[in-house]
Image (cartoon, rainbow, N blue to C red; front, side, top):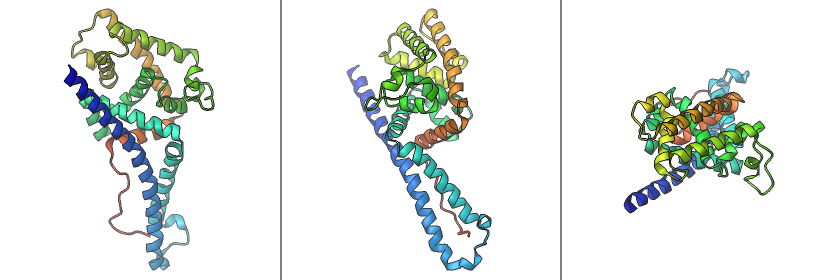
Length: 266
């Protein structure tokens, strides 16, 4: 048992380091888009006669400007804001830990499977409920600002302390459900709800469950409520959620979005 705890601690530390890599990935995107823009200007000055006076007709210029704009929009939101950057890194570490519990989640991320975008908002809300005073709360607050009170200066927990009654009821529901499963600190209970969030209720229940019927009914009730909140997370501001989910998937896969063109285009 002690060896298992040491392995879990080592895995948690490794996931934390990988979570911090999210900051590097996002920062590199901004830098690389700027470098690509500079490289374009260096090359185009040797063939300036081929540049169309209507700049929108120059596909090479347009593609780099679009990439630059997208990268800087993400950078302005998630890199310049220290609380949001910390929240993304924290959440990436938690989702990486979930991948160890549910290997199917890794495949979903790599393939950008449609099921990933059903599971991802559930995981975001579940991780928030697991520790609402942690850094990850800032990400949920940025997506659902109308559900939180204003952040107090110098107090990162102030936003959660002023959540509306519906969100507070969801948190109470989560705590009671986890109590029935064995407690909020019970590792097996947490892994059970993580699998539920990723695989969905029907798929997970088909694999069997060792918990009493009262606990499983509580879990089913929790996830019915959680589903409504995951939809609100996506629909309150679809543009913000689409950007957020793209950032999370990008950080989880670790793949660079910057692909150098094989042939220079004006």
